[in-house]
Image 1 (tube, helix red, strand yellow):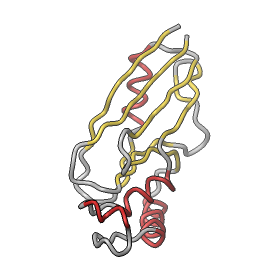
Image 2 (cartoon, helix red, strand yellow):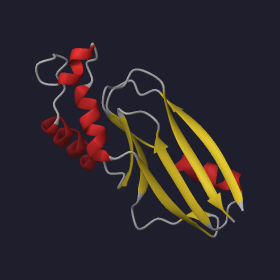
Image 3 (cartoon, one colour):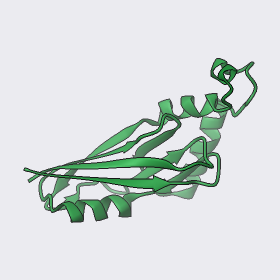
Amino acid sequence: MLSHTKYLTMKVPERMDFVNITGDVEKAVKESRVREGLCLVNAMHITASVFINDDEPGLHEDYKRWLEWLAPYDPSPERYHHNRTGEDNGDAHHKRQVMGREVVVAITDGKLDFGPWEQIFYGEFDGHRPKRILIKLIGE
């Protein structure tokens, strides 16, 4: 049984954006020497997300608009009780909840076993500070 752990550091300059991290995850799979197994990719912050979808700019813009409609940025403590703690990121917590915390992808024959068009993305909802992503691989 093989196991491999890698951390990525992300610092996204925009408050909300999506970064394709598929290449970084593929590199970790190669480094791990796992041929058959599972790959967990986890956003280790409560205002960030990891998700799988198509790398299509129109779709990403749609996500941003939809998320802003669901949970608009508003630093005041009136809309989000969380902001009464002195934070201004109540919206980011909601956006992360909708987009998810992590993904698990099968590794087959030493490669990520994706469906057509699937890519792994890091979603940032409270940018301007460094955050970590965990890549954990296990298998044979």
